Image 1 (cartoon, helix red, strand yellow):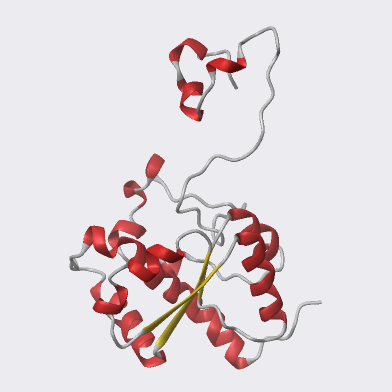
Image 2 (cartoon, rainbow, N blue to C red):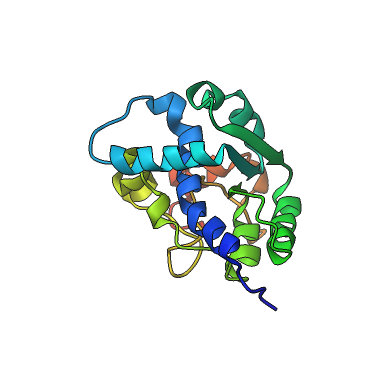
Length: 198
């Protein structure tokens, strides 16, 4: 049963895309450093809102050390960065349980596609993320692999895939190839397998 959203919950969920943009900044600030014209007003409004709140809580799987070691605290001393780290399989159920208990502790969640889709998307607790894509290096699809933004959900609005990975299993015809020839995923793009590997 979906809990009734309180005013605080609605505000927390409404600010989640803006705070997510700030979290994306955490991951790109060191590489891009400079602020360009055009989107500054919206970005500054987001930063000022985060400063008023005083704390950014990020639930993160796999990148906790990068967030803690980054330049965030130096660049934004008025905003306390709190990271809650763990595996996606632990953090996803935790966030969903907190949400159901109307305890909106996570401003941002960065984890695997499975919890984001299977838990958050199917529970309908996500807002579209497009408004969170403020920085030019994030909002411009041409800057991304394949020249587009990638999403996990069918509506292409809720579960933004900003990190590529390969998962899944495979099968092969035992008489068609020697499995010893495949030592990494890159071996699958060897031209000798063109038309023979799907």
